[in-house]
Amino acid sequence: MVYITARRKNRKTNNERLRELIATTGLTQPQALALFNRALGPAAYSASAWKSFLVDPRSTRFRPFKDALLAHAEKVFGSIAARR
Image 1 (cartoon, one colour):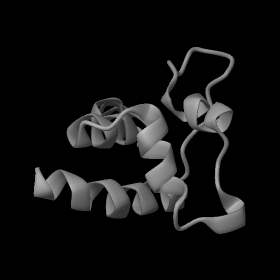
Image 2 (spheres, helix red, strand yellow):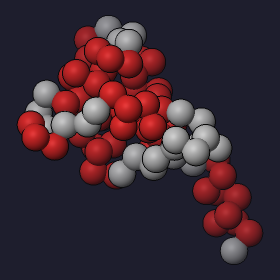
Image 3 (spheres, helix red, strand yellow):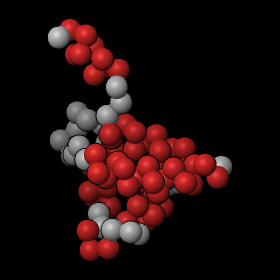
Image 4 (cartoon, helix red, strand yellow):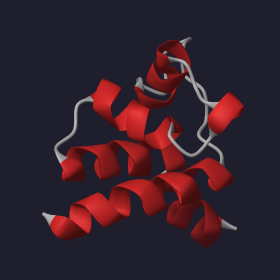
């Protein structure tokens, strides 16, 4: 059990990975949100919701970033980062 707990502490959260992806692209948060939302249609996220994924996890505003959303972010921002 101790091994599993220690291993999870070293693994990045989806929110941390999202912050890394955005930083790698060099985009601002609003630019990143616009690209992220492009394929989501009516399910697009507001600026407020987007910021809740990027704030400190100890903040009351924090919301966990779901696995499916991270997969979408990696697809969108990964292609931009590869071109840089």
